[in-house]
Structures are given as structure tokens and as C-alpha cells.
Length: 400
Image (cartoon, rainbow, N blue to C red; front, side, top):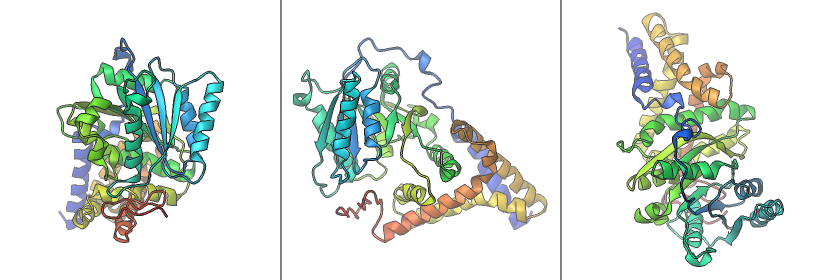
């Protein structure tokens, strides 16, 4: 065979492996609504404290707090919003949302804390979470002087359906999981969201196959930071938030920390929904660039290897199909078909047309550029940039 044919054959072999051996990531079968009927309801509903770190989240914090106040949960549920030095009225909007819910009869306790200045060695989110956990876990701040059994870490842009906390607790107690995490359904309305967001979730599942994450016998661990129900005692046994204080990809770090303490679970959901818009290419680039180089451990070698792997896996198949001939063209076509098939379940989950499937190479090419941009931002001293803070290791910056 020619060199081109060997390259095409390698690309096809990669896709055969991915479809057959990578934990069935592409099937999108790990969902919170597919097996919930088998889970026993707890005899006594444990106490839950919701921790929401919020920095300049005026556009979404009201909707998020109100959705949590309206939870159909029979146990004690309190909400702690940590206002991380916001300058847009986030704290006041959180209080107003709690008041609206109370006026409708949903009298959940909502505490809004003023966040303390960011100390060295912490990311902004982890420092805010640490303050919220400490406050919620202090018996003196609880109505019955008892610390919560579970902590629900959620982002300030994630709205929750009324049954979400109940279902999270049911899975945690019924399956004896120390962590139950949901991949919040990202907004998929604008054109760039429709074309790029489903692939983002597919790539995450490719990297962290949910079936392997959920298997106690496998070492694979991950979580999705937008919605994580955490067994508080297990978190403390693992070293607490301090153990991951400088992690940019804090959710996966939390998954690794807690899987050492017991079984964890990660799945897709429609009960936790992101209300943050990613309606232009720049916003999606920022989302990826903030963490991609951290995922590669800030290594130029891993960056180069990743770019080559992405090109071989996603770009070679259509290139061979369009520009090669003979066996190389056929092998490229088969790899492209396999790639397209792998994308269809995620497109269905996000209710996007199957005609988007063959476009996955173009999407992957953009994500490859975003990955290199992540390294570029790090080299410029702006790694992990979020809300005016560079948070990559060794680059923690003051507020802009």
C-alpha cells in the first residue's frame, strides 16, 4: 500500500477502536432518566446544602436561585450563594429571586455570603466554594445545629427542574454513590451552539467514557461541575476542597478525589440546564481555551501529540475521501462514515438534525484551533482566564 493508504488505514483503525472499545461513549446511554425506576426511595431524606459560587452572574443568578427554591424535596434543603466580589448586583438579584419564590410559598432558606478576597494558590471558583462549604457545614448556621449530609455544587448559570435534587439524592442513596454528577444540558439555540455544542459533549465523553467513570472497578474518574451532589463526609475524608484548591478543571479533579472514597456516577440529563448563551464563536472559544491546556498538564509535548491525534482522527478521513484515490479514498470514506455514526446519538439528544453528522471534521478542526489557543493564552500569562482572572497554575492574577 502507499503511504496515504497506510495513513487512511490507521485513521480507520482508530475509529474501529473508538466505536468498539472506548466504553461505548458515543451511544449516550448514561442518562439520569433511563434507570431511575429501579432506585429505592430513601426512608429518610437527608439534608442537602446547595453551594453556588457566583461572580458577575446578574444575567442568570435569579433564574438559578429560583429554580432551586422551587425544588420538590421533602428533606432539609438550604441554598448558599457565595458572591465572589461581583460588581453587577449579583447578590441583590439572588436575594430578590429567593423573595419571589417565598411569595409563592417556597420558603427555602437562602444565605447570600460576601466572598472574601482571593488568597494565593486558589482558583476563584474553588475559593468561593470553600467558603460556601464551610458556612453550610457549620452547625451554628443550621436551623437544627446539624451539618448537611450532602452538598450540591452547582454553577450560577445552571437551572434545575423541580425534581432534580430529589432524583440526585435517590441515586446517591440508592446506589451508594459518594458523588452523583450530571452533565448539564448546554444551550443549543443559536447557530454556533447548534453546530459546536453537541460535539463538545461528545469529545468530553470520548475523553471520559461515562460507563467507565461509573464502574467502581475502573480507575477512570470525572465529573461535570455544573451539577455535583457530593457526600459531605466523603469529601472531608478525601481532604476537602483544599485538596483541589488550584485545579482549573476542578470537576474532574473532584471526581478523582471522591472515587478514592467510593463509587461515583456521571450522566447526561435534561433536568439541569445551562442558561448561559454561547451564541457566537468567540464565547465557545473562551469556554474551550480556558481549560484545554490544563487538561494537557501544560505540556508542549502533549499539546503536539494531541494536535497530531486530532488531525489523524478527524481531518484525515474527509481529506482522504475528497483528495485521495484508490484504497486510501475508500479507507478514508469508511472512517468518515464511522465518525458520522458516532455523532448521531449526541445529535439526537440535543435534537439537532442528523445532517450535521458529516460536519464533525469541521467542528473538530475548530476545536483543534481552540486547543492551540489555550496554550497560547497560557504562554501569554492569561491561562484559565475567567471573569478577569488568570487562574492557571503559576498565573493567578488579581481582578482585572
